[in-house]
Length: 546
Image (cartoon, rainbow, N blue to C red; front, top):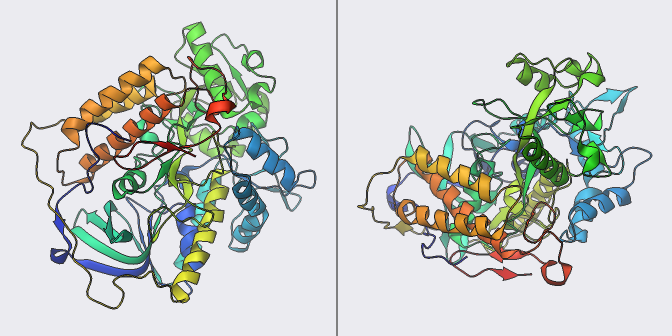
């Protein structure tokens, strides 16, 4: 999207001829379920290198509590899962993609079980629960609220069985490298070894989300949108960046890090109440506590304002003492603050949770840049449309990871002609970014200001005045931050978040309607006549619509 501060192609100066070089068939950026599933699919025939920003378990996938959706119960059906996904997507989901992903769910579950995943069972059968937006019980869990941990651990173990995966942790990827319009690898940084270049025949973005752009977020600290920002700098097409899903229930203790409280607890009978102990969701939606996430998030925000409270409460006391064993992760997090979930109400409020939009990909995960694929939260498959149906995200990562893995194997073992550099001397790539002579920055202050601004003005409820101010303020901050050359991840993360914050604010300003997770108080109605379409963008270009 066009602005006075152009998005720079590279964040730093470098010369690949002067840096250590690593060569691989396929480079995967990330270590969540999408990354791991793609890697597993390719290791029998290709050498795979995985780079992860911190530890292999520092991902949204690993911390996911909610579960994975699959129509496996006798009383459920594929068509019902498809219908619920399309309804939640508010007219912007691609039905072919929905059917592809939802149709792959039972097979994904069988595969995980074969690899050793232990899902919750009763009488020898996997149990299923229900969440908001689902018309049937189809949510599969592991140890109640540790589903992401179980799936990620299973995939890590399966991936580790094959020596062809080279997993390198604590490696920050700065930028995608390109030759003649094709991605040929990345420029990366390691705290001990400094800059290095990883060259690959194919590159897969699976870097996760950007929840840390917001002051209130369920995401781990690593979720600063680096993959999405580097794709933007490389010229990839981005889609639907105005659609950010907010989770309605996050443990709220002033000064403490936020902890997601899975909506599964509401599916099993937990109730949202205010400080007086009164249940209030029935006044906002016919499904009450099981309403879609965006409805519940707005209802909580509205009720907080009406009652002058800083939070509401989630009451699980009616679920009995067994609730501690049913949700051990939640029980442990709350116990740190002397909250016993079996007898005490849990203080909660909404937080940024999931980026619905991302790098636009086709049916096999290809981006608009040659030899670059994307899967998981960083991608935009148009599965979710304008609002993600709960527990569809782990599923999407697994299905698209497998699809991408199979497609790349077919390409590279089938003698694809699109393999620049192979067999010859690697072409030199340089960047001569000059250092700014302007004043020093206090990075934490700029970062905190950005996150607070995004929460206030590009958050759950939006309007033209706030979005215009956010757009202008972020552009001003960009003017004196994006011209800097940093030498460590803190600076690069801030530049990435500023780039994305501006794109998100501008897209939200353009969409003059309310649809899904995008709620405009000045345009409170859905407008299919003008806005049953997607907003797409690319580096330093005007947005367009599809």
